[in-house]
Each structure stands twice: as structure tokens, then as C-alpha cells.
Length: 422
Image (tube, rainbow, N blue to C red; front, side):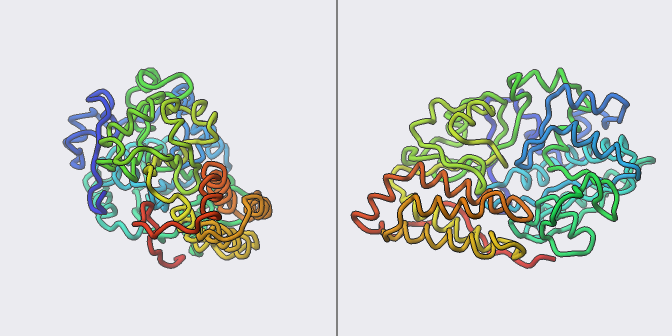
């Protein structure tokens, strides 16, 4: 996967290539030729989104219609924020979507802004991905101004892991640092400039644009009743063709890996949901499908749409230690569980990776001290990642204590350098 253009993988054909068309439709005329006239808002839009069963694609999977109605119930004209910051290092789906199909996202932003009567709309991208921002700016210029629709302002946000959390993004848009704030109030109550604010992932907006255009029945034609429609996934790690693909709900994860060229050296484990996700043993792969029930049976959820393959001969504890240390360093420095607790967790995981004498129960005890605390979900996400690591790789912890650390290996999961908070 390259920074400029991650590989695009189609799973089964044209009927799945809805969000990531091939060829890319970055040009407005090509976009309209493919999808028809721009969608128009109507009174039943929120009901149609509810019937479609759309949930947010930023990680929390909150029902989108519920979020829209909460913003609409505010007493002041709202603000719309499309979140394309994608601070998750293992994910590229939002960057690919904005780079290759920006008009789908803008369709959703505009139809929602008009339906809500919003006064302004912002689309935030990761500052490190200037080509993505340029693509969206060009798309906005092509669309021009339309009566009743606020101009979409494209902004380059700080490239920190928690900067894309909705309260952090709102705080930054209000002139502060991109750090999470204590709630309540939530952004839908008082957000940008004190107005009710809808903050949703850019893939969510792309799906809204399609539902507004084609309807909920069209959307549910793919997927399952519990996992309707399609979702974008970043398939990475030890696969032959890492990249971004689109898959219908209910698709077996084994098929998704085949779409990425297959595993290069067996599947020791899968990291599902990114760095706030969980490890699933490779032996469970044949039972996993792309739906909440299947994933939850193995303690996992789709999260931000990452599926990373750990090969058979890799040392999992090296990967876990490196990612945990990076996550500890990405805290906002505002709360004790993050400032003191997460570095202590990272220390313990590094001791385990080096073959030192640390019992898994000690690490679990540290996780209990940080879980459920702080201004945001960062401690919870780190705890989820590490807890699943201790469970799935318990044999490796014991083996390291008997034989010592594994030889250093080439890193598999990325841990990028990051900038400031403004």
C-alpha cells in the first residue's frame, strides 16, 4: 500500500463497486453520468436512512438516523462536519474514498446540510495527506454554489490519533487544540460556535448520498438484515495485495482475504477494527463473517474497518509492544489514566515481549485501572487492544518467559510520526 494511491480491490464484481467505482469518478460529469442527478433532500430522508439501517462508519457504529434527528431537534441552525481525518494508522479507506470518489461524499454532506437547514459545512482531512485535500477542494470547486446549501469548507486537521474524535475535532474547529473534551454537552447539543453539530465519518456521508438517491430498498439489496448494504475495508498486513475493498454485509472474511491476494504465510491471527480493535485467532477465520453477531462471538467488532493479517511466523508480542507504546504516546496529556496509566501498560507489554517476568494478570490489572476513565475513549481502546493481545497470545507470553525474546523482525503494523495539536 502506497501513500499516494492504495490498491483498490473489488470483491465480486460490478454490483459491489458502488462506493468505489472503477474507473474513479473524481470528475463531476463522470460522477453524474454514473449516478444520475444529485440527490435532493426530502422530508422522509431521515426515515429512509433509518429504514436502510445505516450506522456510522467511523468506528462507533451509532445509528445514523438517531444522530441526525438529535441534531435536527436543536433550537439553533446546525453545523455539519464530515470527518475524513482517519488518524488510524492501519486504515486507508477514507483517504481512498476522498481521493477517488469525492463527489459521493459531497453528495451526502450537501443533502444532509440542506435537510437540516445548516448554516455551514466543513470537511476535515488529515493534514499529512495533501493530495486528498487537493482532490476534495477541486471537487468542491466543480460543484459551485447551490441555493440553500452552505459552501463546504475543506480543512486540514492535525494528524494525531485522537484528533479525529468528535469532541476533539469540534474543539479544534472552535480554535482550540484537537484534544477531546469532557462531555456533556455532546456536539449535537453544543458544538461548532455553540451550535448543534453533526459530526460523521466521510464514508457515512457517501452512503447517505446513495440512500438519498436510490432509497433504502436499493441499499438493502446487498448485505444481510443485521448488516445491510456494503462497507469499505482496509485489508493490510501479510497479504499479497493490501489495499481497500468494498464488501457486502455477511461476506466471509476468508473471501475478503482472497480478494487481497490471500495470506502470504498463513494466518496466525487477525487484528479486526484497527488499534482500538481486537485480535482474533487465525483458527477462527473460517467462522468469521462481516456482520456484528459473527464478530462479537469472537470478541471483535468492525470498528474503523481494518482487517490486518499477522503471519504464522511473526512474533505477535513485538507488534503488540510497538503499537501499545505508540498509542501511549498519542494520549492528549489531559487525564491521569492516559498520562500515567498507558505508559505503565506499555512498559509491562514491553517486558513481556522481551521475555521478562511479568504475569498476564499483572497487565490485566493495569488495564482495569485505566478502563472507563478519562475524557475520551482512548484508554478504553488501548485496554481493548492489549487485553485481546494477552488472551490470544498467552502461549507466546509463556514461551518468551521460558526462552527469551524473539529475534527482531521487520515491523508489520505502521506507527507513524505525528505532529502537533493545532
